[in-house]
Amino acid sequence: MLLWKKVLGPAALMGISIFGLSAPSYAATISSQSNVEILALDGVEVNDENFAHPDMLEVQAGRHQVVFRYYGDVRKGQRDVIYSTAPDVFTIDLKQDDSIKILAPRLNSYTQAEGYFRRGADWKVQDQHGNVKSVHYEPLTGNGVMPFNDIERAVARHNAEQGNEFAPAQQAAVTTPNIAAQRITPPKGDDTLIQTIQLLYNNASPAQQQKIKAWIAGQ
Image 1: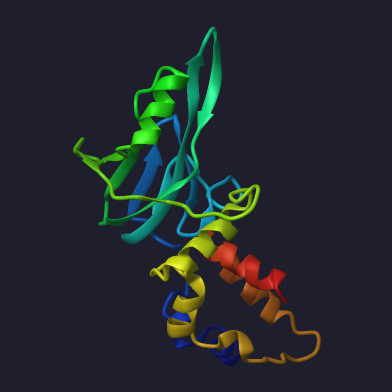
Image 2: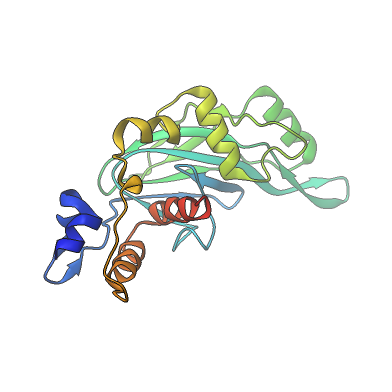
């Protein structure tokens, strides 16, 4: 038990009972219509590896950052083509049991899509009650030939440049204790530490698991 206290600390131990670690509870959902692609949520790329249900993102109540783009079929001459845009970003506050869906503009032709996004899209979301409202958004800034090929890097750079609440380095420096710098030496042959780390990882949220992976990769 002493080892658990050293590894987890008092805050983490609050989530442990005689039945094991409590699983994270999700209170809200974020989704989109078929012609809108959600690329990242709170700095984490949206894919099958990071999220259990990429088409219906489960999140905790609070403020979230969504990176998305238009990606859909339109008519160009006599054929169907894909029209895609550079990513946009918006933040939204969600309460328990909220459910929002990003709506796609109704675009039929390539020319229509070009004109619509050149004028500036009116992105809207619909809540669980059917209410529709426009959201304030900004373009995701990027550098280089393929600035959004690594979407997580692009989002991290954007947040750092904006100095917003989602900038990970600034947030970690203020709120995160330097637990990683603490060195623990378990008895030789004792695999309790490994089991503890595995248990924590398996019970972490997708976003937390991604941060753990990034930390390990940097060691």
